[in-house]
Length: 295
Image: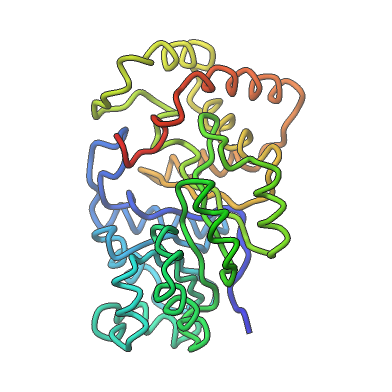
């Protein structure tokens, strides 16, 4: 039986203790990470997107979840090699906490960090085997390109897909793709809705393409100088015409509270006008510049 609980907001944990992202400049300590996790629960957020690759994130979640495992969902991202290891009984050694979490009633979605791996027969078998063995309630993929998603959908056999969608990146807002996702009853998660924080504030780390298109950032900042308004636009623009959950990464409890507050607000005609204005502005950003892997 699928114990995995549906959720509208998912907490991404890549930066709860690391300086992940181009606008994040400082690492957090365990106390700060636990504070973010505690705040998430107060907001009824019980689903955490994590990975062994997010150094320190596993330890933070392990320290936070002491009991009542069944109310928590963990989305664990793995590469193809780690997935094969997880499927071959190596999880007790390499993922002891996750193994215990599952055996004590916790809810797990195993997700390929790069959906491109799902096109390999062995990888598909490993992922589907984990679900059959009860090592996960759901299995899924994280994809970067619509073309890869379409190929993965042609194979089917997975429950969840994560796609990058933002004001600046609407490649996955293709009606044909959405219909295929719905037809296969695949749950859709939208990640990178803030484009690693780029849509909220100017980056601390230099990005080569930024100088050429800095006028877009300056104009956006002059149109919408209010930080909360930027968060509101980023969230509502991706949920305007897509039914999905959103994955959000945060630097602090305060930021998480603000994001959740903006998520709960309802759209009105004035906000819709600002969304269309924002999309038009960001459409000038080349599609080959919106993939953080290339920065």
